[in-house]
Image (cartoon, rainbow, N blue to C red; front, side, top):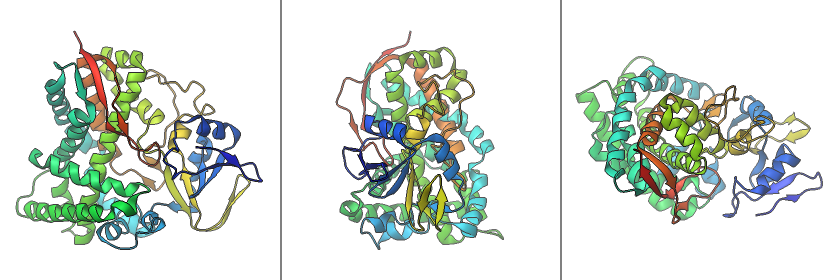
Length: 402
Protein backbone atom coordinates (compact mmCIF):
# COMPACT_ATOMS: atom_id res chain seq x y z
CA UNK A 1 0.00 0.00 0.00
CA UNK A 2 1.31 3.43 -0.81
CA UNK A 3 0.52 7.09 -0.25
CA UNK A 4 1.16 9.30 -3.22
CA UNK A 5 0.56 13.01 -3.64
CA UNK A 6 -1.46 15.01 -6.11
CA UNK A 7 -0.46 18.45 -7.31
CA UNK A 8 -2.09 19.82 -4.16
CA UNK A 9 0.10 17.46 -2.11
CA UNK A 10 -2.91 15.57 -0.78
CA UNK A 11 -2.25 11.94 0.26
CA UNK A 12 -3.92 9.21 -1.79
CA UNK A 13 -5.16 5.72 -0.82
CA UNK A 14 -6.58 2.87 -2.87
CA UNK A 15 -8.96 1.68 -0.15
CA UNK A 16 -10.11 -1.29 -2.25
CA UNK A 17 -6.54 -2.64 -2.33
CA UNK A 18 -6.43 -5.77 -0.09
CA UNK A 19 -3.17 -4.48 1.40
CA UNK A 20 -4.76 -1.22 2.57
CA UNK A 21 -4.77 -1.18 6.37
CA UNK A 22 -6.17 1.37 8.78
CA UNK A 23 -3.53 0.54 11.41
CA UNK A 24 -0.66 1.20 8.98
CA UNK A 25 2.12 3.75 9.20
CA UNK A 26 0.88 5.08 5.85
CA UNK A 27 -2.43 6.21 7.36
CA UNK A 28 -0.69 7.71 10.40
CA UNK A 29 1.77 9.55 8.15
CA UNK A 30 -1.06 10.83 5.99
CA UNK A 31 -2.96 12.11 9.05
CA UNK A 32 0.13 13.98 10.19
CA UNK A 33 0.51 15.51 6.74
CA UNK A 34 -3.12 16.41 6.02
CA UNK A 35 -6.62 16.30 7.50
CA UNK A 36 -7.91 14.83 4.23
CA UNK A 37 -6.81 12.31 1.62
CA UNK A 38 -8.03 11.36 -1.84
CA UNK A 39 -9.13 7.76 -2.40
CA UNK A 40 -10.42 5.72 -5.31
CA UNK A 41 -13.88 6.28 -3.73
CA UNK A 42 -13.88 10.04 -3.12
CA UNK A 43 -12.24 11.56 -0.06
CA UNK A 44 -11.11 10.25 3.34
CA UNK A 45 -11.18 12.51 6.42
CA UNK A 46 -8.40 11.56 8.82
CA UNK A 47 -8.46 13.87 11.84
CA UNK A 48 -10.77 14.06 14.83
CA UNK A 49 -11.99 17.66 14.62
CA UNK A 50 -12.89 17.45 10.94
CA UNK A 51 -14.63 14.08 11.40
CA UNK A 52 -16.65 15.60 14.27
CA UNK A 53 -17.65 18.59 12.11
CA UNK A 54 -18.55 16.68 8.99
CA UNK A 55 -20.62 14.05 10.80
CA UNK A 56 -23.01 16.88 11.67
CA UNK A 57 -22.83 18.70 8.34
CA UNK A 58 -26.33 18.87 6.79
CA UNK A 59 -24.81 18.95 3.29
CA UNK A 60 -23.65 15.35 3.73
CA UNK A 61 -26.13 12.46 3.67
CA UNK A 62 -25.58 8.80 4.55
CA UNK A 63 -23.20 7.57 1.86
CA UNK A 64 -23.72 3.81 1.73
CA UNK A 65 -26.93 3.83 -0.33
CA UNK A 66 -25.05 3.41 -3.60
CA UNK A 67 -22.55 0.85 -2.29
CA UNK A 68 -24.07 -2.05 -4.28
CA UNK A 69 -24.27 0.04 -7.47
CA UNK A 70 -20.66 1.19 -7.09
CA UNK A 71 -19.74 -2.50 -7.36
CA UNK A 72 -22.03 -3.48 -10.22
CA UNK A 73 -25.00 -4.82 -8.22
CA UNK A 74 -28.26 -3.27 -9.49
CA UNK A 75 -30.95 -5.81 -8.54
CA UNK A 76 -31.78 -8.80 -6.37
CA UNK A 77 -32.89 -9.50 -2.77
CA UNK A 78 -29.94 -7.75 -1.14
CA UNK A 79 -30.25 -4.72 -3.42
CA UNK A 80 -33.96 -4.33 -2.68
CA UNK A 81 -33.46 -4.74 1.10
CA UNK A 82 -30.45 -2.42 1.23
CA UNK A 83 -32.14 0.37 -0.72
CA UNK A 84 -35.01 0.55 1.80
CA UNK A 85 -33.37 -0.01 5.18
CA UNK A 86 -32.85 2.58 7.88
CA UNK A 87 -29.10 2.74 7.24
CA UNK A 88 -29.60 4.50 3.91
CA UNK A 89 -32.94 6.31 4.22
CA UNK A 90 -32.96 10.10 4.53
CA UNK A 91 -35.24 12.95 5.56
CA UNK A 92 -38.76 12.52 6.91
CA UNK A 93 -38.88 8.81 6.09
CA UNK A 94 -35.71 8.17 8.10
CA UNK A 95 -36.94 10.23 11.07
CA UNK A 96 -40.36 8.52 11.13
CA UNK A 97 -39.01 4.97 11.08
CA UNK A 98 -36.28 5.79 13.57
CA UNK A 99 -38.83 7.36 15.95
CA UNK A 100 -40.99 4.23 15.78
CA UNK A 101 -38.02 1.90 16.34
CA UNK A 102 -36.35 3.94 19.12
CA UNK A 103 -38.39 2.67 22.12
CA UNK A 104 -37.32 -0.91 21.40
CA UNK A 105 -33.66 0.09 21.75
CA UNK A 106 -33.88 2.44 24.72
CA UNK A 107 -31.42 2.62 27.66
CA UNK A 108 -34.09 1.16 29.96
CA UNK A 109 -34.57 -1.81 27.62
CA UNK A 110 -30.80 -2.34 27.59
CA UNK A 111 -30.59 -2.28 31.40
CA UNK A 112 -33.38 -4.87 31.74
CA UNK A 113 -31.39 -7.29 29.58
CA UNK A 114 -28.05 -6.95 31.41
CA UNK A 115 -28.57 -9.85 33.89
CA UNK A 116 -29.31 -12.23 31.00
CA UNK A 117 -26.28 -10.98 29.06
CA UNK A 118 -24.08 -11.61 32.11
CA UNK A 119 -25.47 -15.12 32.62
CA UNK A 120 -24.82 -15.92 28.96
CA UNK A 121 -21.20 -14.73 29.24
CA UNK A 122 -20.70 -16.88 32.35
CA UNK A 123 -22.15 -19.93 30.60
CA UNK A 124 -19.85 -19.56 27.57
CA UNK A 125 -16.80 -18.88 29.76
CA UNK A 126 -17.51 -22.03 31.80
CA UNK A 127 -17.27 -24.07 28.59
CA UNK A 128 -13.68 -22.97 27.91
CA UNK A 129 -12.12 -21.88 31.20
CA UNK A 130 -10.51 -25.23 32.08
CA UNK A 131 -9.05 -25.75 28.60
CA UNK A 132 -6.46 -22.98 28.76
CA UNK A 133 -7.10 -22.21 25.11
CA UNK A 134 -9.95 -21.51 22.73
CA UNK A 135 -10.77 -20.15 19.31
CA UNK A 136 -12.32 -16.97 20.60
CA UNK A 137 -14.62 -16.22 17.66
CA UNK A 138 -16.23 -19.67 17.46
CA UNK A 139 -16.16 -20.42 21.19
CA UNK A 140 -17.27 -17.07 22.58
CA UNK A 141 -17.71 -14.00 20.36
CA UNK A 142 -20.07 -15.47 17.75
CA UNK A 143 -22.34 -17.47 20.09
CA UNK A 144 -22.41 -14.60 22.59
CA UNK A 145 -23.29 -11.96 19.99
CA UNK A 146 -25.97 -14.11 18.35
CA UNK A 147 -27.51 -15.46 21.54
CA UNK A 148 -27.54 -11.94 23.06
CA UNK A 149 -29.53 -10.97 19.98
CA UNK A 150 -31.88 -13.90 20.66
CA UNK A 151 -32.34 -12.61 24.22
CA UNK A 152 -33.18 -9.12 22.97
CA UNK A 153 -35.61 -10.41 20.34
CA UNK A 154 -37.21 -13.06 22.54
CA UNK A 155 -36.03 -15.91 20.30
CA UNK A 156 -35.33 -19.49 21.31
CA UNK A 157 -31.55 -19.92 21.47
CA UNK A 158 -31.84 -22.91 19.13
CA UNK A 159 -31.97 -20.37 16.28
CA UNK A 160 -28.57 -18.83 16.96
CA UNK A 161 -26.53 -20.90 14.49
CA UNK A 162 -29.01 -20.27 11.66
CA UNK A 163 -28.91 -16.51 12.33
CA UNK A 164 -25.11 -16.44 12.63
CA UNK A 165 -24.58 -18.33 9.37
CA UNK A 166 -26.92 -16.06 7.39
CA UNK A 167 -25.59 -12.87 8.98
CA UNK A 168 -22.04 -13.95 8.15
CA UNK A 169 -23.02 -14.41 4.51
CA UNK A 170 -24.83 -11.06 4.31
CA UNK A 171 -21.67 -9.51 5.74
CA UNK A 172 -19.89 -10.34 2.48
CA UNK A 173 -21.97 -7.54 0.95
CA UNK A 174 -19.90 -4.95 2.86
CA UNK A 175 -16.75 -6.10 1.09
CA UNK A 176 -15.46 -4.78 -2.22
CA UNK A 177 -15.96 -8.36 -3.49
CA UNK A 178 -19.76 -8.04 -3.16
CA UNK A 179 -20.43 -8.82 -6.84
CA UNK A 180 -18.55 -12.13 -6.65
CA UNK A 181 -20.63 -13.23 -3.66
CA UNK A 182 -24.00 -11.67 -4.52
CA UNK A 183 -25.79 -14.94 -5.38
CA UNK A 184 -25.22 -16.46 -1.94
CA UNK A 185 -25.85 -13.07 -0.28
CA UNK A 186 -29.25 -12.90 -1.99
CA UNK A 187 -30.12 -16.41 -0.77
CA UNK A 188 -29.15 -15.49 2.81
CA UNK A 189 -31.28 -12.33 2.75
CA UNK A 190 -34.26 -14.33 1.42
CA UNK A 191 -33.83 -16.91 4.19
CA UNK A 192 -33.75 -14.16 6.82
CA UNK A 193 -36.93 -12.67 5.33
CA UNK A 194 -38.63 -16.08 5.51
CA UNK A 195 -37.52 -16.44 9.14
CA UNK A 196 -38.81 -12.96 9.98
CA UNK A 197 -42.19 -13.66 8.33
CA UNK A 198 -42.73 -16.68 10.58
CA UNK A 199 -41.55 -14.68 13.60
CA UNK A 200 -44.05 -11.86 12.96
CA UNK A 201 -46.92 -14.32 12.64
CA UNK A 202 -45.85 -16.01 15.87
CA UNK A 203 -45.71 -12.69 17.77
CA UNK A 204 -49.07 -11.59 16.39
CA UNK A 205 -50.58 -14.79 17.81
CA UNK A 206 -48.59 -14.82 21.08
CA UNK A 207 -47.15 -11.37 21.94
CA UNK A 208 -44.56 -11.06 24.69
CA UNK A 209 -42.45 -8.26 26.20
CA UNK A 210 -39.55 -8.63 23.78
CA UNK A 211 -38.39 -6.19 21.10
CA UNK A 212 -40.12 -8.06 18.26
CA UNK A 213 -43.47 -8.04 20.04
CA UNK A 214 -43.15 -4.30 20.61
CA UNK A 215 -42.33 -3.66 16.97
CA UNK A 216 -45.21 -5.84 15.81
CA UNK A 217 -47.50 -3.78 18.04
CA UNK A 218 -46.05 -0.57 16.54
CA UNK A 219 -46.91 -1.92 13.08
CA UNK A 220 -50.52 -2.43 14.16
CA UNK A 221 -51.03 1.01 15.75
CA UNK A 222 -51.99 4.39 14.30
CA UNK A 223 -48.70 6.03 13.25
CA UNK A 224 -47.17 2.73 12.27
CA UNK A 225 -44.49 0.77 10.51
CA UNK A 226 -45.79 -0.80 7.32
CA UNK A 227 -45.44 -4.55 6.94
CA UNK A 228 -42.53 -4.02 4.56
CA UNK A 229 -40.81 -1.59 6.96
CA UNK A 230 -41.23 -4.03 9.85
CA UNK A 231 -39.76 -6.95 7.90
CA UNK A 232 -36.89 -4.82 6.63
CA UNK A 233 -36.09 -3.57 10.16
CA UNK A 234 -36.11 -7.08 11.64
CA UNK A 235 -33.77 -8.41 8.95
CA UNK A 236 -31.46 -5.46 9.66
CA UNK A 237 -31.52 -6.33 13.38
CA UNK A 238 -30.68 -9.98 12.71
CA UNK A 239 -27.74 -8.97 10.53
CA UNK A 240 -26.37 -5.88 12.26
CA UNK A 241 -26.98 -7.04 15.81
CA UNK A 242 -24.77 -10.10 15.42
CA UNK A 243 -22.09 -9.08 12.94
CA UNK A 244 -20.78 -5.94 14.61
CA UNK A 245 -20.88 -7.27 18.20
CA UNK A 246 -19.01 -10.44 17.25
CA UNK A 247 -16.33 -8.44 15.44
CA UNK A 248 -16.03 -5.90 18.23
CA UNK A 249 -15.60 -8.53 20.95
CA UNK A 250 -12.76 -10.09 18.96
CA UNK A 251 -11.13 -6.69 18.56
CA UNK A 252 -11.58 -6.07 22.29
CA UNK A 253 -9.68 -9.23 23.18
CA UNK A 254 -6.95 -8.35 20.68
CA UNK A 255 -6.67 -4.94 22.36
CA UNK A 256 -6.29 -6.47 25.81
CA UNK A 257 -3.83 -9.11 24.58
CA UNK A 258 -1.71 -6.12 23.54
CA UNK A 259 -2.44 -4.25 26.81
CA UNK A 260 -2.42 -6.90 29.56
CA UNK A 261 -2.03 -4.34 32.36
CA UNK A 262 -5.39 -2.84 31.37
CA UNK A 263 -6.98 -6.31 31.46
CA UNK A 264 -5.73 -6.70 35.03
CA UNK A 265 -7.24 -3.33 35.98
CA UNK A 266 -10.61 -4.56 34.68
CA UNK A 267 -10.27 -7.87 36.53
CA UNK A 268 -9.55 -6.00 39.77
CA UNK A 269 -12.42 -3.56 39.27
CA UNK A 270 -15.43 -4.70 37.20
CA UNK A 271 -16.87 -1.18 37.61
CA UNK A 272 -14.41 -0.19 34.88
CA UNK A 273 -16.38 -2.22 32.30
CA UNK A 274 -17.92 0.82 30.62
CA UNK A 275 -14.69 2.87 30.25
CA UNK A 276 -12.87 -0.31 29.19
CA UNK A 277 -15.36 -0.86 26.38
CA UNK A 278 -15.24 2.81 25.32
CA UNK A 279 -11.44 2.65 25.08
CA UNK A 280 -11.69 -0.43 22.85
CA UNK A 281 -14.31 1.28 20.68
CA UNK A 282 -12.04 4.31 20.38
CA UNK A 283 -8.74 2.64 19.50
CA UNK A 284 -9.87 -0.56 17.76
CA UNK A 285 -13.41 -0.19 16.34
CA UNK A 286 -14.97 -2.72 14.01
CA UNK A 287 -16.34 0.19 11.95
CA UNK A 288 -13.15 1.64 10.50
CA UNK A 289 -14.94 4.40 8.60
CA UNK A 290 -18.37 6.02 8.30
CA UNK A 291 -19.49 6.91 4.78
CA UNK A 292 -21.28 10.08 3.72
CA UNK A 293 -22.19 11.64 0.36
CA UNK A 294 -22.37 15.33 -0.58
CA UNK A 295 -25.96 16.24 -1.48
CA UNK A 296 -24.93 19.67 -2.80
CA UNK A 297 -21.71 21.50 -3.63
CA UNK A 298 -20.01 23.06 -0.61
CA UNK A 299 -16.67 24.34 0.65
CA UNK A 300 -15.05 23.11 3.84
CA UNK A 301 -11.58 23.87 5.14
CA UNK A 302 -10.34 24.97 1.74
CA UNK A 303 -11.68 21.90 -0.10
CA UNK A 304 -14.53 22.02 -2.64
CA UNK A 305 -16.88 19.04 -2.34
CA UNK A 306 -19.05 18.49 -5.39
CA UNK A 307 -22.55 17.04 -5.06
CA UNK A 308 -22.40 13.25 -5.32
CA UNK A 309 -18.86 13.00 -3.89
CA UNK A 310 -18.29 10.14 -1.44
CA UNK A 311 -16.65 11.15 1.84
CA UNK A 312 -15.26 8.46 4.18
CA UNK A 313 -14.89 9.65 7.78
CA UNK A 314 -12.09 7.50 9.20
CA UNK A 315 -13.31 6.64 12.70
CA UNK A 316 -10.21 4.57 13.48
CA UNK A 317 -7.81 7.35 12.50
CA UNK A 318 -9.87 9.98 14.35
CA UNK A 319 -10.03 7.83 17.51
CA UNK A 320 -6.25 7.61 17.57
CA UNK A 321 -5.58 11.25 16.58
CA UNK A 322 -2.93 12.65 18.98
CA UNK A 323 -4.39 16.15 18.54
CA UNK A 324 -7.63 14.95 20.17
CA UNK A 325 -6.00 12.38 22.46
CA UNK A 326 -2.59 13.71 23.59
CA UNK A 327 -2.09 10.43 25.48
CA UNK A 328 -3.65 8.05 22.95
CA UNK A 329 -2.52 4.76 24.48
CA UNK A 330 -5.21 2.50 25.94
CA UNK A 331 -6.01 3.53 29.52
CA UNK A 332 -9.32 2.36 30.98
CA UNK A 333 -8.94 4.72 33.95
CA UNK A 334 -8.35 7.84 31.82
CA UNK A 335 -10.80 10.66 32.44
CA UNK A 336 -12.09 13.38 30.16
CA UNK A 337 -11.70 11.48 26.90
CA UNK A 338 -13.46 13.07 23.93
CA UNK A 339 -16.28 10.95 22.49
CA UNK A 340 -15.38 8.56 19.69
CA UNK A 341 -17.42 8.07 16.52
CA UNK A 342 -17.54 4.29 16.26
CA UNK A 343 -21.36 4.37 16.30
CA UNK A 344 -21.45 7.22 13.77
CA UNK A 345 -22.90 10.59 14.63
CA UNK A 346 -25.39 13.23 13.62
CA UNK A 347 -28.67 11.97 12.16
CA UNK A 348 -27.15 8.60 11.24
CA UNK A 349 -25.89 7.20 14.55
CA UNK A 350 -26.33 3.54 15.42
CA UNK A 351 -29.85 2.79 16.61
CA UNK A 352 -28.74 -0.23 18.65
CA UNK A 353 -25.76 1.31 20.44
CA UNK A 354 -27.34 1.07 23.92
CA UNK A 355 -27.94 -2.66 23.48
CA UNK A 356 -24.47 -3.22 21.98
CA UNK A 357 -22.84 -1.35 24.86
CA UNK A 358 -24.93 -3.28 27.40
CA UNK A 359 -24.07 -6.77 26.17
CA UNK A 360 -20.34 -6.13 25.64
CA UNK A 361 -20.06 -4.31 28.99
CA UNK A 362 -21.37 -7.46 30.66
CA UNK A 363 -19.15 -9.86 28.69
CA UNK A 364 -15.77 -8.17 29.23
CA UNK A 365 -15.67 -8.14 33.07
CA UNK A 366 -16.92 -11.75 33.18
CA UNK A 367 -14.01 -12.77 30.95
CA UNK A 368 -11.52 -10.67 32.91
CA UNK A 369 -12.66 -12.24 36.18
CA UNK A 370 -12.07 -15.72 34.80
CA UNK A 371 -8.94 -15.66 32.67
CA UNK A 372 -5.53 -13.98 32.63
CA UNK A 373 -2.25 -14.06 30.69
CA UNK A 374 -4.04 -14.08 27.33
CA UNK A 375 -1.87 -14.56 24.26
CA UNK A 376 -2.48 -15.26 20.60
CA UNK A 377 -0.08 -18.02 19.50
CA UNK A 378 -0.81 -17.46 15.79
CA UNK A 379 -3.22 -18.97 13.32
CA UNK A 380 -5.48 -15.91 13.48
CA UNK A 381 -7.36 -14.81 10.35
CA UNK A 382 -8.83 -11.35 9.82
CA UNK A 383 -11.22 -9.46 7.62
CA UNK A 384 -9.47 -6.63 5.72
CA UNK A 385 -8.46 -3.72 7.97
CA UNK A 386 -10.95 -1.39 6.28
CA UNK A 387 -14.71 -0.81 6.21
CA UNK A 388 -15.97 -3.20 8.90
CA UNK A 389 -13.22 -5.44 10.26
CA UNK A 390 -12.70 -8.13 12.87
CA UNK A 391 -11.26 -11.61 13.36
CA UNK A 392 -12.50 -14.57 11.35
CA UNK A 393 -10.45 -16.86 13.62
CA UNK A 394 -8.67 -15.75 16.79
CA UNK A 395 -7.02 -18.58 18.77
CA UNK A 396 -5.92 -17.55 22.26
CA UNK A 397 -4.20 -19.25 25.18
CA UNK A 398 -4.78 -18.17 28.76
CA UNK A 399 -4.50 -19.12 32.41
CA UNK A 400 -7.51 -19.70 34.64
CA UNK A 401 -7.53 -16.92 37.20
CA UNK A 402 -6.93 -18.12 40.73
